Image 1: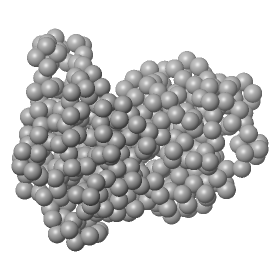
Image 2 (image 1 turned 180 degrees about the vertical axis):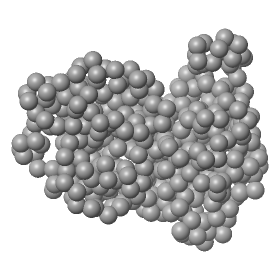
Image 3 (image 1 turned 90 degrees about the vertical axis):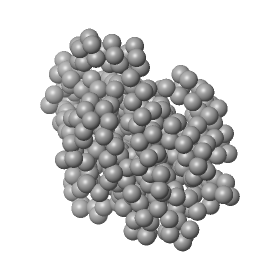
Image 4 (image 1 turned 120 degrees about the vertical axis):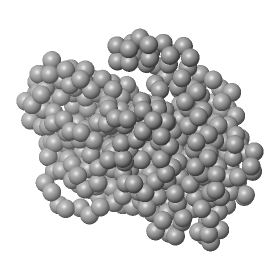
Length: 398
């Protein structure tokens, strides 16, 4: 892989220390560097930062200082009158400040990565959304330089304005983490032949042999949007009525939307004793939480679910999940599938509690699958391969 080893790579992505995307990015970069790649991280302040609306970045909120910082305010696409005040609301809403700042951010990404032979862009949302990418792609294309993009999330802006999807024609390669995402992008008019499918990487830590009790659930950044949270509460209420004693650890992304509403819903149903709330977990703390759980509950109908799925699998934790989004693609026949209703979740938990569903062997097989297909070192090798073979077209990985 000397072709990649000998060139400079700029990796543009989230570097906030309390976000799943940043830790995925960090783990992948560490693996690339272990393989000899010369990688420079370029990052910016997004909504999660305390300095989001300033020309500054709180460096103590970064994973580490080994990065190039693009300091520019973040403007929300949908500002709130109460939260931001009438003046800021009017400026952002009617002058579309989010678009203008996004375009400037894209130029600054280009400027800070211009000397790199290869640029990789992690497309998420907001500071790493489609508007900065559009500008970056246009400027890289003018110079005939290589740009790769990994699409984690589809930006609402590109759903509403389909013309923006032409930007992917200017990219050397488009990387996605599932066939499900590939189909979603193809529905927006993006050529599927330009896409490479790989897997969302995970770090595999040692199993410590803890006794497994209760369950774990990840609420993401939007706990009330497609995550099956109301159905989970309904299931806990059913279990409570049946006299089944168990607990669910609920952790969320930093700055989770409507978290107070979600907690109030649990309180109003009298479920506080059945739920343990946690902040965003990372590293060994994250692994320990999963290794203490009998199963991970993923009743999602939207999003991707890649973070809880891969974390559960790498920690030999069984998964209770729906057949939506990326879930069946990652779990295959090793998932404990439900239809997403409260009754299906409750019935499955009861079967696990009484031993009707054997979770230990499932967990072991899931860990084997994780090591074989989703270990971050394998994903890094896939990325190396894409960078090296870009002139030959995308390579499909399963």
